[in-house]
Amino acid sequence: MKNKDHEHHDRVLALYPVSRGFGYALFEGPQEPMNWGVRTTRKNKNKQCLAHVQKMIKFNHPDVIVLEDGESKSSFRKKRVNELLTSLIALAGESGVRVATYPITQVHSTFELFNATTKYERAEFIEKSFSTIKLPLPTMRKMWLPESYGMAVYDAISLALTHYYLDS
Amino acid sequence: MSLPPENYMCSCRKRCGLTQSDIAYLLAYQSQTFLSELENGLHDAPLHVVLAYQTLFDMSPGTLFPRKALEVEKAIRERAGARAHELRGKDQCASVEHRIMLLRQIERGQMPKITFHEKQGPRAP
Image (cartoon, rainbow over all chains, first blue to last red):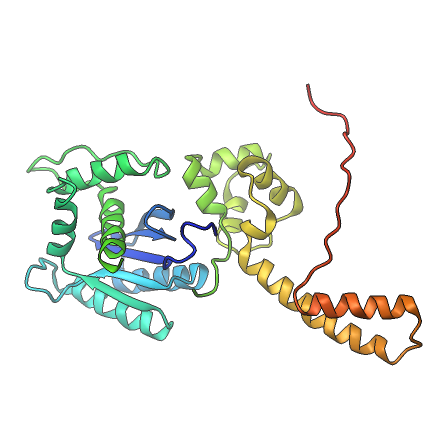
């Protein structure tokens, strides 16, 4: 949706793989979230994720795909997700889409500037900053609980915002 | 910038916080299946859906379906050039010359602007 403010910004598709699939966020500017959500996969997770992302690329024609840098020293990602990240980079290349990868520490340090140091604080910051993103804020995680399903969206949004902040 | 997205139907709905079933209800659909297919670009949206989105979200069809709008504009401009070329061979009276001039303008992307004085029809109370 073109307007004067975001005509010069890249259309960014940020992807954040999780155990159940991946969170995604599509932005047409740092203040213009267009689409967001979680895609769930069951068997053959990587193959299904790649199929979903291929459809998203074909539908949305992003300028940049933003991913976590799985090879950085600070990455805690396991083998399957690292393979998926590598495959996503290859898919983006085949589709003619630029890729930007950021170590997770870079996302943390970007949001620390806004006093958001934990995942929950980042999600709170995003929820307060974007009135258009009407997502229920996940409850604060207790140690014995698994991560909330919806947190993957906030992680993807964090990646997208980090890209805009560092790319500006 | 690259090609625009297929459509912004999902973006409009999510940004205002409505669900697919809400929109489906407003459009008098029994379920949200067809709406989901429209959002994913599997079908061309019927006219009443396009007008409904214009009413709900103040989005013109060209803004809602930017890629289709680009394709239609490109096709019109090409055909305008072809039509102008066809007409050149015919008897060049004033009206034909005028049409050729208009078609050449359309080919260059300068669309004729027509304004209507909208009649104030019956309005809902």
